[in-house]
Length: 237
Image (cartoon, rainbow, N blue to C red; front, top):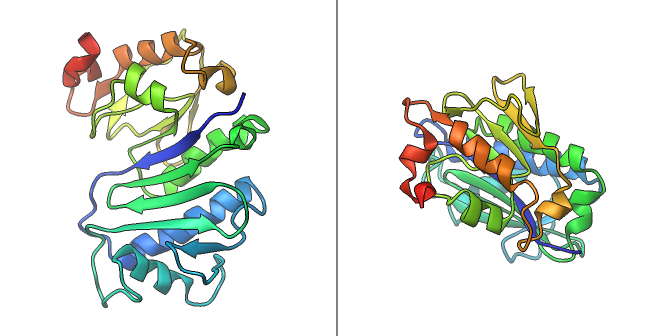
């Protein structure tokens, strides 16, 4: 079975970041992605441009900074606000990297299942590594039905996937007794990986992992003291 999937990383708006700060983080993200899948993004294009870049190409940070604000070059001291850009690998593999003001999306398109199933543990680690780069609050392995139907996702609230990273400044959860492996990460976050085959969880007609996701949701407490189920009324329906 083949399926589409993605990695989503989210952080709160950062008024103190410059566009160059964001560009450095974006370059470092590409580097981590290429380490997880060697050769996948040795080179990449910015939006629809023909030129190819690598993470060590001279001037790559300046070009990424300009791309984030939709220009050839970013104005000096421009802030990381209302940014958006897309990067595409130079090779034939169908994936893209999208960066916006508060999120990074690594989207895989069919055929794509192998990128996850040949080493799921490496993908789980990558999610935590990307979250560390972006000083994130939440990151997860995204499958549309899991996000929309199981999490009843609303912006600004945590999401759980097959693999999830969560920082306590955003929310906390107790995974004790559930079919999930929990690992504390050096940056103070927590990685949660469900004990289920991610390929089975990717089947929108199935329920693999659903009970665990719903149990995590019930146990989640936001940093302001509210329970996730209270903050998202659609979870009660």
